[in-house]
Image 1 (tube, rainbow, N blue to C red):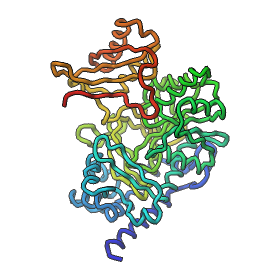
Image 2 (tube, rainbow, N blue to C red):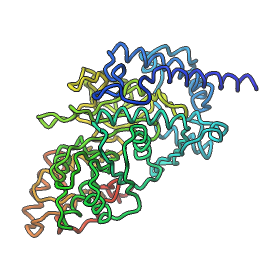
Image 3 (cartoon, rainbow, N blue to C red):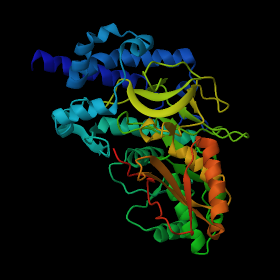
Length: 478
C-alpha cells in the first residue's frame, strides 16, 4: 500500500469511527417523544461540540479521499488543519455550487471526483447510485455505500419518529422509485422502525385511489401536486378522501408546507395533517429537514426542523454568498457530517430560508426554517427586471375561490421582443371571462408586482400532475 493509499484508508477509518461515536440510540427510539433525547434535545453548546468534532475528522478525510476537494484546498492555499471550527469554515471555505460539481463531472466522467466513493469501496459495499436531472448541466451522480444506507435509515427514523409515525401506521409510498433520494431513504427509515409499506409505483391514479379505499393506509407519501390530484380523482370516483382514514400526508419534492394556500387546500381535501421532508441528493443521506408536532401554528405559520448533528446548516447572501446571521433570509448551505460517500463541505442547496435556533415548542433544540422552504434560487423568474418565484404565483392563484389544482406559467417574447407572462388557470366559473381574468391578474400583481395576462380554462383542461410539477414553460428568445 502506498503512503497516499494508507492516509486515505486511515482518514476513512477515523471519519467512520467519529460518525459512529455520535450516533446515539442507533436502533430503537429511547422514548415515545424523541428517538434520541440526548441528540434531539441537546443544548446549543452540545450541538456545536458534536459538529466541530465531526468537522475535524471530516476535513482530512475529504482531503485524502476526494481529488475534487484536495484540488480545492490547494487552490485556496489551505490545509485541513487551517479550519479548526465552524467560524473558520464559514470564513475560509467558499460555498460549493452545482455548476462547480457539473464541471468536475464533465472533466472526470462518469462519476466526477467530488465524492469520497471509490471503485473499490463500491465493489465491496456499494448500495445505490442516485442522479440529478441534468436539466441545467451534466447530470451529477452519487454512489452511496451500505454504511450510508444504515446512517440514512437511522437519521430518517429519528425524523419520522418526530413526525409521529408509530406502530399501527401503514405508509402508502406513491413514487416512481427512480433515482429519487427521498423515497429510498424513507423506505430505509421505515424498515428500521418496523413499519409496513405499500409500494405505489407503476399504477395510475385510479388504481392508487382504490388502494387507499380498500386498504386504508394511514399515511400517504407523495408530492403536494399529487396529493391534490389523487384526492380529486377519488372525488370523481364518488369517494370522499376525508373518509379514507389517511391521517398524515407526507410530502417532499416541491414547495408545499411553505405555501399556505396550497397547504390548507391539501389538508382540507384530505382532512389530514401535512408533514414534509427537505433535503437534496448531493448532501444526503439523511432527512435534512422535517416537520415536528409543533410545525404548524395557530396563526398559519410553519417551521421545518433541521437535524444539526448530522448536517451543518447555514444561509448565505444570494448575491455574494457571504454567511448571514440567524433571522436573515438567505440561500441554504449544507455541510453533510453523516456520510461515508458524500460528506459535502458547504454545498449550496439554494433554497431561500430564515433560520431560528431558539428552542421549539416540541422540545427539540435544533434549528428551524421559519416559513419552511418556498423558493429555490434556480426557479427564480426574471420578467422585465421584476423577480419572483413560481410559489408567489401559486399563492395568488390558490387565494381565488373556485380555482383548480393545476395552473401553468408561460413565459414568451412578443413580436416586439418584450418578455411577457401568461398564467393559465382552471376555474369552475370559466365562462365568467374577462372580469375573472382581471381579478386573478390583480391578485398576482399585488403579490408579484408585475402585470400578467391570465387565461381562464375549463376544469380538466390542463394535464394532471403525476409526480413533481413543472409549472413554468419558458420559450423566451435568449
